Image 1 (spheres, rainbow over the protein chains, first blue to last red):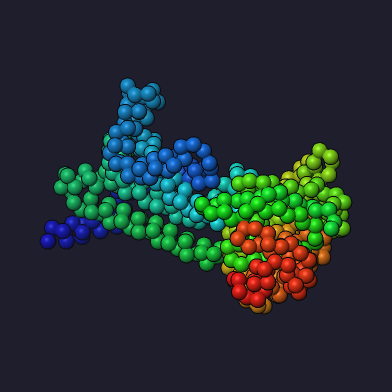
Image 2: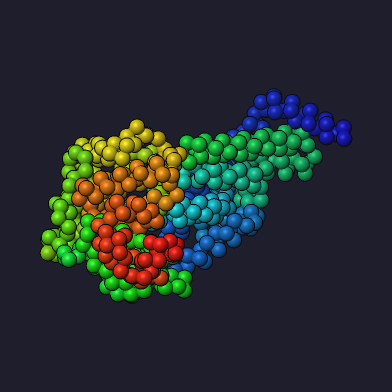
Length: 234
Length: 274
C-alpha cells in the first residue's frame, strides 16, 4: 500500500518536473498517434464512403472483412508489418524497421479498419435517408459520396478521435516494429511496459496517468463536438 | 381529351413479394392530377415509378419531349425569380428538351447545411449555371446568380428570413416548404408530390397548399398523392383513384367528388375505405 502511495507521489513529482526524457516520449507518442490517425481517417472514411454508396461484387465480403479486421490483434499486425519491413522482406530496402515510420504503418493497418467500419455505418445510415432525394435531384454517385462525407463530417471526426485513442493506447504492434529504442521509438505504452518490468514504477505510473489524461481529453473533445454539431446542424 | 404528356403502359411493380402496381395504364394530360386511394393502394409506388426512382417490373413509362403535347404554358416554362442563365442540355434527337422532373417527399430530406445551401444544392446538382458556364470568368457571376435565385424562391415560400438557419432545426412545416423551394428552384416541368401535407398541422398544410397552387400557376404540371381530400378538391383537375394497385377510375376532379364512377371510389368518399 505504501509503495503504491509512494509511487504516485514520485509520479506526480516527475510529471511536474518537466523531465526532458518524459516529454520526449510524450511528444513522440502524440506524433506517431496523430499521424496514424490522420492517415487512417482519410483512408478509412474514403473506404467507408465507397462501400456505403457503392454497388459492386464482393461488397458484403468487404464489410465482413472490415468488421473482422477491427478485431485484428495488434501483435499480429505488428508481426505482419515486421515481416514486410525486415531486411529480407519485400519492403526491406527502405530501411524503415525500428523507425517511427514503421510504427505509423503498423498503426494505420490497425486503425483504418476501425475507421472504415464505423464510417461505413454512419455514411450508410445517412445514405438511407438521402438516397431518394439525391437520386431525384439527379446527383451522380461520386457527388453523392462527397455529399455524404460532408454531411457526416462531425460524426466522422469523432470516429477519427476514437482512432487516435486506439493508436495512443496501443502497445503490441509498436513494440514489435519500433523496438522501443530509447530516444528513437520509445512511446508511452512501450515505456510503461519496460519501466514496469524493470521495477521503475514511478515513471511507469506517471506515464500511465498522463496517457489516461490524454485519452480522457480526447473523449471529452469527441463528446463536445457531437453535442455541438447536433445542436448546430441537427 | 388532350394529348398526354406522360403515358404509362401496363405498368406493374412487385415489391417484397407483393404486387404494388398491377398493370396500370394511364395517360395524363391535366395541369394537376391527384392520385387518391386508401392506404397501400400503391400511390407512392406509382409516383416513384413515374419518376424513375423505382423500375417497373413490367410495362413502360413514357414522358413526351417538351412540345405542344404539354398542357398550355408548360412548354414555355415560366421562369422563377430573376435571370434565366441555365439552358439545360437535355435535348432529345428531335431537338425537343426532355421534361424536367422534381419530387417532394412526405418526409422532407434536409441536408445538414443551411436552408439556402439546401436550395442551392439542388440547383448545382442539376448542373445549373456554375457547371454550365464554359468560361471560368463567368462562374463567379453565375454562382451569385444561383444564390440570388435561391433567395428569390425562398422568399416566395415565405422563408427568406430563415435562409442562413441550419435546415434540420426547422419545424416540419418549414422543412417541407424548404423542400418545395428546392424543387421549385429547379424550374421543373412536372412536380411529383408524395403526401407533402401528411403529418403537418393545419396551418402548415394551408401554407404548403398555397405554395403548390403558386407552382402550378407558374406553369408546372402537378402530380400529387394525398389523404387530404380538401386539398385535392381545391387543387386537382383530374383524379386517378387507385385501389389494390389498379386504376379504379381516372376522371375529372369535379366528377370524382360529385359522382365517382367506380364502386371503390364511392366507398372511399363515403369513408368506408381508408
